[in-house]
Length: 313
Image (cartoon, rainbow, N blue to C red; front, side, top):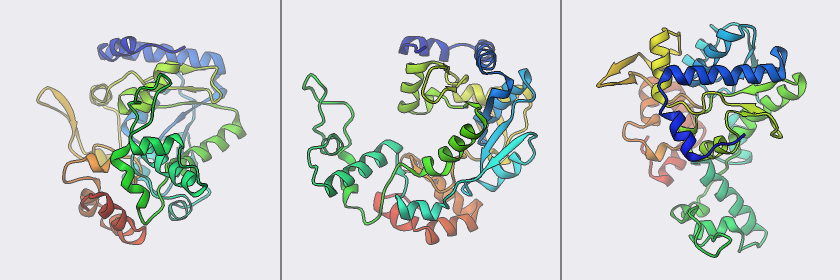
């Protein structure tokens, strides 16, 4: 069942102990519905899914975790995953170099990459009035004729980029192996996604709430109303082991911070890098992981991509 924006704001303002109790209720509802042998935790090795796995296994110790080894994770993440019991490791059918060659680079954001990918396909077919093209021109309209808020004219210049651009990398590298696992096992996922991370995730949570029992692809996201500070405080308060890439989690000026990495998604993903202050993820990678940096920038061709969108590396 979905909720409205006001309800989400109320939940996000709950103290952590209330959030923990509500999350535990949602986990129990999910497991009661599908059974212990009918669920799994999608485990990335990052701080959010680490908290989720801890919460689930406090209630149900035998629930398996599933990790997709894309080859793009920080080595510290892989080492941490290998310390966790009962983890099934999946691998994609395509390598990253094959993905970017076939469908394109993931840049700016998933939504922008999707729009560029779709617009190029439409233009190639002579469809010049498609909504994706109108969005890039800043003329997309709602049903009542007013301008839509979803305009991407700022990124129209990417149509002329001398390289492929696509939103499909995550689908190929992560989602497809998970879909195959679900088909083979019948298990339903418990995800560590949070509504505060993006507009897309917030809209999804508003539509379904924590447990999407009747969705085409049933999923649970029981910490979706948490904030990053909740995750850091939970790890700190409970002294939970986590990936060393984050450095230390410490209180600082009334909040909790990581002394190392702030995000630990795929190392070479360029989604959101244009918003980061220097040193950005690629500049930090040059110092902390020089071998991966060289592979990303020079072997995978990210130098031309980052040059084109004006991101330092």
